[in-house]
Amino acid sequence: MEFMELANERRSVRVYADKPVPRALIDEAIRAAQLAPSWKNSQTGRYYVAQSPESQAKIRACLPSYNQKSSANAVLIVTAYEKGVSGFNGGEPTNELGNQWGAYDLGLQNMLLTLRARELGLDTLIMGIRDADAIRAAAAIPETEAVFAVIALGYRAQDPAPRPRKATEEIVTYLE
Ligand SMILES: Cc1cc2nc3c(=O)[nH]c(=O)nc-3n(C[C@H](O)[C@H](O)[C@H](O)COP(=O)(O)O)c2cc1C
Picture 1 (cartoon, rainbow, N blue to C red):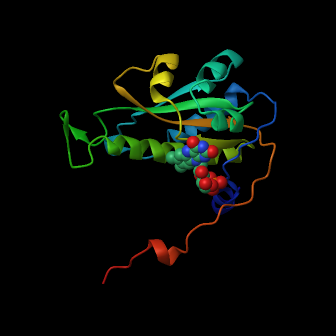
Picture 2: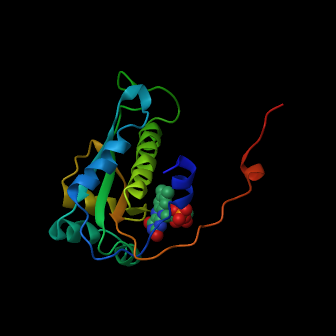
Picture 3: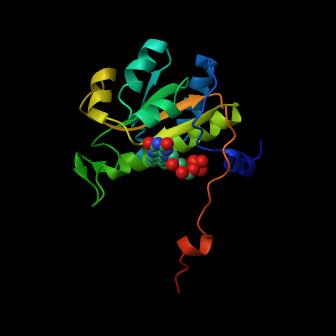
């Protein structure tokens, strides 16, 4: 699939079919995420995959009811990053953004994950509204990692219309 076709086709999908996602496809999507650039190639993104019904139920319980509903039937991928590495040099933040660079790197990875998922015939929903402490406990995520989005991954059972985007002129400033 052409890149722009893929980018145009991706949607946040909030209704999934009751159809299991094979582990091979989950691995494929995560392998694509690993191709993302990262601060000094530090690759601090981490993925905790809830594929089994039992683990899905544990992670789903850490979401607000509307995200539980939107992600029903989907695999849940908790995304996290190792803190104090990306954006750091010898344990000290390189600049004012500190750990935000870890979040930046994880976002780049997750974008590739969602696009590759679409290319594989799957869809995704990035969920930032979740109980991070509950997820940390449920998935045994160490305190050295920051818990970020939970990504639902599954087969779409709806065709959402594209959400509008701002006019390019609104977000771009060409400098004199
Ligand atoms: C960081 C982040 C957090 C988000 N959190 C949620 C969420 O908790 N629940 C939800 O339904 N959608 C969530 N979304 C999806 C956005 O609402 C969606 O990407 C946006 O409306 C644009 O629609 P599109 O993804 O279909 O292009 C999140 C998206 C991002 C990037």
